[in-house]
Length: 253
Image (cartoon, rainbow, N blue to C red; front, side, top):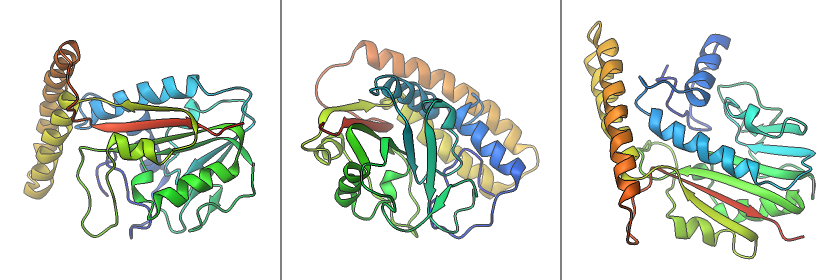
């Protein structure tokens, strides 16, 4: 099994996860440890996702989690709402309420909130997907999308990257469109360096090496956090290198 902190691509061939493996994936993403190479990425993502959800108009009766995966962020969604998880058939997690290849198999105006967390990059037709978000949302409903930017991809699976401008343009005509960069150069450097080390450790396969790598990840995350704070203090100009992007938009009433 891949490292529990690495996303599994929807539709990729893989066996179903055991309950213990599923819990390990959820923990690594919702409560990442400093000894994970992607710790800073997840910490910044969770922080900004919490902030975006806090600004969602209430009341929220129905929430749709598109390509929900392990549903690691379920507890961040409005607790009073009915939460529906959608994923593709054959996904390894086994916790979706609805499995379908269709985007989206729901009636018009069925939800107050649609989220797609670290999965929108696998959408073949992103413009159509956003149109579908609007269709299933009630007037005034919110869509939240989070996507990686400075991260590796699998050559055997379709995946795309968006700049901030491209992500915002997809929500043209929506209200209150907001873009947040989840970590900058310091986070991106840390995650990519840690990912390189992770691949080396996996290929070498020496006993005890993974334990040493965890110590190295903890050091990398400490240095990366300092670099990130330094960059934030001296931020300026228009050139950026975000680790991740998060967009939030409200369907016009």
